Amino acid sequence: MSFVQQINIGAQYQGLDEQQIFDNIAARKKELADSLLILGHHYQQDGVYQFADLSGDSLKLSKEAAAVDNKKYLVFCGVHFMAEAADILAADHQVVLLPHLDAGCPMADMSTRGAVEAAWPELSVASGVAEDRIIPVTYVNSSADVKGFVGEHGGSVCTSSNAERVLKWALDAGELVFFFPDQHLGRNASFALGLAEDEVVLWKRGEPQGGCSTEELARAKVVLWDGYCEVHMRSFPEHVHTWRAKDPDVTVIVHPECRNEVVRLADMSGSTEGIIAAVGAGKPGSHWVIGTEINLVERLATLHPDKTIDALTPGCLCPTMDAIQPANLLWVLDNLARGNLVNRIQVPPAIAVQARKALDRMLEI
Image 1 (cartoon, rainbow, N blue to C red):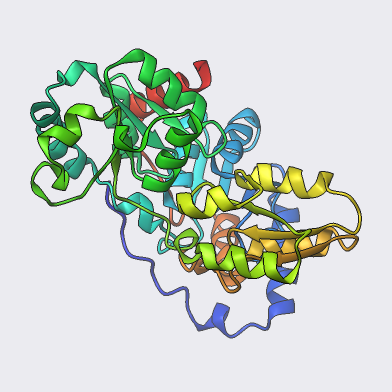
Image 2 (tube, one colour):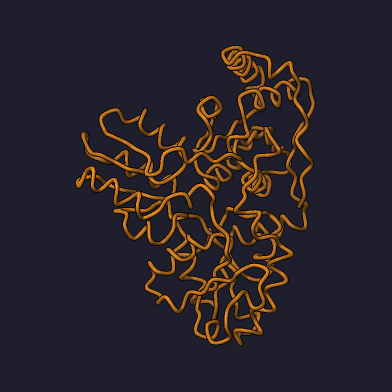
């Protein structure tokens, strides 16, 4: 799928002071209350997040929004793939809007359908595994096009919280798993299941046979696409060592999109929802160092003043998530109030049907 470029929302929005924007958003929310549901991902800045009717990670938000079928307009304060998932799972009468079209996901963009389709037969030939015995698994952080490919080929979507379960299902269902786009989530899940290092191979985009030898692919049980999250790639083992040197009693918890070396050094790893739950259950006075996006870390520090909470790597802001500013949210709501739909996200029905198969298969697992 392709997206049009975000239009300039105009000086009448950019020139407003912050409090005026907040007041206007609150007024529009009240005016549109009967038909409006605002969804806010945990990585959103507080100026936007404060207006969310539902908050959570990407799939939780999409599922919960679909369950609220009395709201026609779903304004998704997240990124493209999240809004697509919401549209796939939403009822026919619901409309999904994204406040800023530049809110994308570089990792999701690293595995396009065209690239995956080109690699698919090449992997089959090089590995000696028939195409119908290769099971594709895509992280929810992927486009609807890629999810559609996975649905067509009998595979499943996974999330950061259920990647191990989905990967185990895929290993049992076929001879080889092709996992994309996030190499680190795939590697961490593979090692958690006890796979040996030579059973997990990295497929490098644009290189013949993914840069792998025939012998490597013949031994492999999981082949990882070479995608990654730019935010979580900023965390290194040295960061963990530095914090432990400062406080030997610290609890380090990181997102499984981090490098495997970081995850192995951490005390815990988990999805955004898992991190929130773990910190919330922590003892008063405990010290937590969290390896994930800075907006979530700072929000947790505010919510839990009885604990010391620090970022593993300061300044890890997701710039595409941050593209959504309060002014963009107000612009969308103002247009809704006037009967205009701007930045609507629609997944073509043929793609949505196949992508839904991959999402439903995950829920069955």
